[in-house]
Image: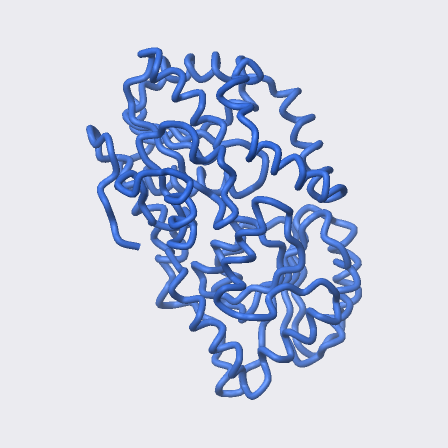
Length: 376
């Protein structure tokens, strides 16, 4: 029997990353096969799901204002649970999955599933406790809080305060962090960036996401700064990877250009600063690595809170132009990294590198119908 069923969706990498990392933690504690990750949208209607995902990416990258309006509309209107017929195929697939797996507990990293599980519980067709694992910070859509879940897990105290104000009982809320790979705790003592105070060369990691403006111009400006080591992670954009490799050839300090990679945790732990959009998974992994972050894109709605979380700890994290990126890095690295050390120290309290294991421990405790209160 599956001990834990984790429900995710492909609308934003944060949902999938949280689900994947939580499942790995569960299996490290309870053995292989003890967790099952499922995307009901992909299982119930794969073709429709592919179209919807492409539309989502087009909206957040091409028409961010339109996406912002859509996000706010979902937040303010009671489309769920009033119109659950819109996800009737997913509800049927969920019931089938529950019969197959008979999980002891269910965890949702995507908010719509809470409404489906609430419907089944009220109809007497669900006995297992179910939880929402909130993958955003501060700017929390009400979809996360409206279903009558057994409990909620949130990534930080700032978000906990917002969720409590939205009506979630404090006794059902736990601040355990965002599930990140176990790599961060496993290598906490042996991986770190070189000490700038001794005159080490600064290292900058640039994670280039699709749809980010000025990506090529920013990369060129960074490569013109010959006193820094640079790493570019370009995903599956092969043309960009080849162009950057040509431009980086012969540079005094190394410039590494990577395609799709699983080494982001290691890179975050060994670089001084990461430049990226304010995605949920990227932001939380940077915090787990205690790697200060410059934000060059914010998807309206869900990512605004991720940036706000950083802004409350330090200034100058939003860099909208290539010149702003370089200026912020010069300030951080001046005087052998004096500002960078202050920045890093201010972010340290937000790190929860062991969140995946901590949440898995709670969910694997069978028979617990409400979360045990825990300190942040």
